[in-house]
Amino acid sequence: MIKQWKVEREWQEPFLEALRARGASPQACDAALGEVDEACIRENAMAKELFGDPVAYGKEIPVSEPMTAREAGLSRTRALLLAIAGLVGMFFALLGWTGMVTDATKVWGANPTIWFVLGLIIAVAAAVGDTVLGRHADFTQGRADAGSTLLNRLLPWIIVALTLVGMLVVKLTHG
Image (tube, rainbow, N blue to C red; front, side, top):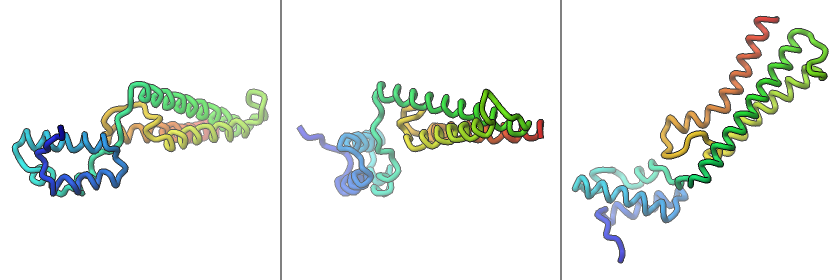
């Protein structure tokens, strides 16, 4: 049996086209249309009255599929490993920077510049890696709202910023 939607056909078609144009799967299109249909039934109103322009609304709603529990766990694990790598990079960078500022010839058996450059490379690479992986390396999952998306995108770059703040503190205290 084919589902009879409360959503009027002249609103439904452009809405679905807008979703498909953004790469939504058939399941995601069906789920989005189902939510619109439920709202129309609940409010006893037409889709155009509740949601306005179908193309504009189709461009607003998220089209990505929710992660399975396994995918969410892997995403958190990747985010955690990248955060740890960023912190290790920050530690090496600050270790090398402190050695450079205090004119030390060796830090842990190597030139401080080596530790500094290695640390910066690791910290920035971890942040870039997290950014490139996007939602596949997020601490928080679920419905993407502006707060969680911003938090997931900023976390790795906060470590880079803390490295720069640490360098400034070392320079001010030892420089």
